[in-house]
Structures are given as C-alpha cells and as structure tokens.
Image 1 (spheres, rainbow, N blue to C red):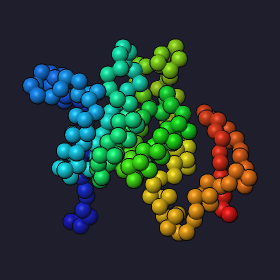
Image 2: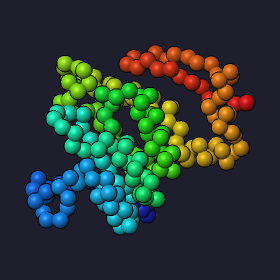
Image 3: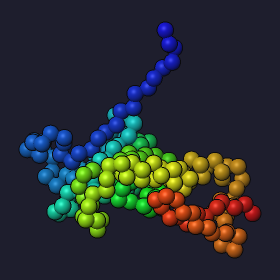
Length: 204
C-alpha cells in the first residue's frame, strides 16, 4: 500500500450571481454582482476565511455586446489588497495575447499579491477573433503551436515574487537583477511565432 499522501486543492470559481442560469433570480445578491467590486471582495474574503486555496476567474475573448464583467488582472489586483493568503488565478488566452504583455501582467499581479498569482492557460475558444482585428479564427493546430511556444517564453520572462525575494536575500541589489542601462546589451530573439526583445540579467 502506498504511503504517499495526495492533497486536493479547493478553489472558489467565481461566476457573478452563481453558476446556475437562473441564479440571478435568487433574492439577495445584487443584480450588478459581476460589476460590483465590493460584492466580489466579500466573496473572496469569505473563500479565504473558509481556507480555500484559490479564487479562480474564467474569461473569454469572445462575446460581443456591452462590457459585463471585470478584466481578470484588474479585478485580481484589487482583491490582492483585501486578502492575505488565498491564491488568485486568472484565465488568459495565448492565441490573442503576446508573451511580453502577459508576462508583465502576471509578474505585476504576483508582486502585488506577494506571490499568490496563478495562470489558467487556455488557447482560446471558437469565437472572438473579430475583437482582435482578425477576420478568421486561428486553426486548432496553430493555436496549440502558439500555446507551446508561448509558455516557453513565459517561463523565462516572469521574475516571480518568491524568486526576487530569494535573490535579494542572497545579497543582490535590484540593479544587479535588471542591469544598469549602460551595462545592458539588448538582442532580438526570433522564434517560429514570436519576435521578442530579450534583456539578459547582468551582475555588477
């Protein structure tokens, strides 16, 4: 019999008034709950008090019409200020984003929350290309090729809160981590799908 203990992570999957299609009819919750910041903060605090592991936000690049839900990074950054321990997970699509922008957003959220950011990576659905000035949906195979290279880039670009803390504990200053302008050499890295400017970490 195996002695390995497996742990189950429990997350709060936030969905406005609820996941049931008729949940908005239940008396009590405000009808504007998806756009009511205080209401979302209350749910996040309740989830943290219940010792859940993370607060999870789904997202989609499709769905025309009016704005009806907060953008994940904006909302989770606000929740980070009102919580202390619960993880903050954002859904981000790789097909309609660029590695640099996603890395910058996640690094910002991770530092604002002191190391609690999480990424639910998806390739994107079958709609929404028009919202990104594309007439046609990216083919299934190409979406996964993009995602594979995307995650490779992200793993080298995000300096997380915990990594920064460890490096600072080792006695390195921020100038040592990011380089002084006069000490840094810039280079362009051309990959199959992304053209990126890479800035190496230098030491003084």
